[in-house]
Length: 291
Image (cartoon, rainbow, N blue to C red; front, side):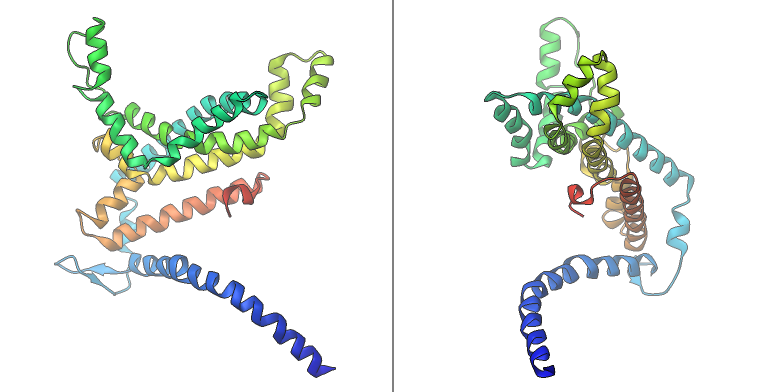
């Protein structure tokens, strides 16, 4: 009996190891190992030639409390919050229209959301830079209409950075909202109307509570990546609207201070985990975030 149980255990273990083993090894090499390396590097020093010296120190984390850095943290959170809010205001009505459309236009609207994923976001942001530039189409149109006598400087402003962020992340808001609204029972809306509730009251007391999971998912999927999207502020903001991602990129490239960049990366990871935990506490579905 014992031999049979051991044989059964062995026969069940081998397929499990063969199936899960490669995935676990891949996660170990591509996720856990780099994370450990970044954590260790954040506790290291640099010599006079900016080479990484593996001597334990917390000075990198103390530098993160610099007033200049704190200002950038606040600016990053503000831009991420504004971007998320605009994505909600635009994405929710659009998602509702898509989910409630019964004709073939529904697939057309859905494809309009998916198509941007087919092109690299860096290329699309450069397209916005060309469009908004001094010699771009928008300025040419404004001057041709007599609205402006000379080209208007539209680039290198906070608003332009927010525009680029919204453009990049609006699909991440629409898709979870569309999934949540599509599951909404239309009979509940009819019942609310029959009971005399106005559309605004139905929105806040029926629709929003029932689609809150999609709303939370969209907000998390927009807010968190927005903090690290450094190339949008580089291209459209021109360095005038630095974010946490810009700080990290600058430390690893121009400043050549990898330990400080690693410390900034760890802080960004911690912020991400905190936000995901808050999302989970609020009743969010972790599967919708891919967690």
